[in-house]
Image 1 (cartoon, rainbow, N blue to C red):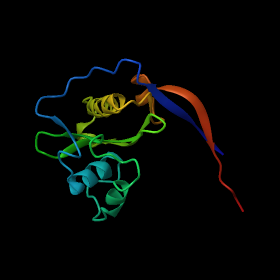
Image 2 (image 1 turned 45 degrees about the vertical axis):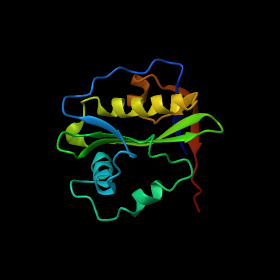
Image 3 (image 1 turned 30 degrees about the vertical axis):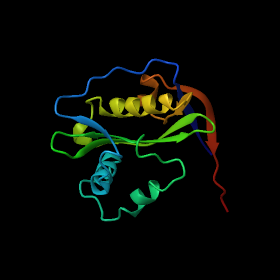
Image 4 (image 1 turned 90 degrees about the vertical axis):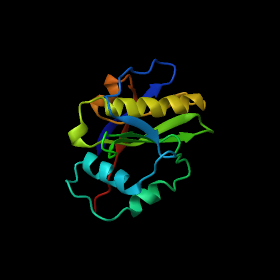
Length: 160
């Protein structure tokens, strides 16, 4: 059995204030959806190594999900045009909640506040659509931004 916290950010709380470093820009996937740059950002951001494989099918599949919204997904572009940070944001209009998945920063751009900026920008967009809260992740990063643990989920595995 494995247990992990379920964290949420109430959209009634103030959003963190972080300044974008000079030369970086914030875009949505509506403004620029370079699947190869996205793949490279997520590959490196999740520590798979320096050279991404050629399989971008999983990235295309991710964008076909029922609540995927390119206008809500936020990318931080580096001064050289590479994607430095990626925050996928999903919105369930019926239940009025947002869900972050995935969030990754290329390691050489770490500790610059890019993930905070990308996540905050995406949450502001979902709040404008009526989201009451946003589900986050497990790391301490989310708690530092104001996410609160609301419960724990247990993951079970059947062994034969």
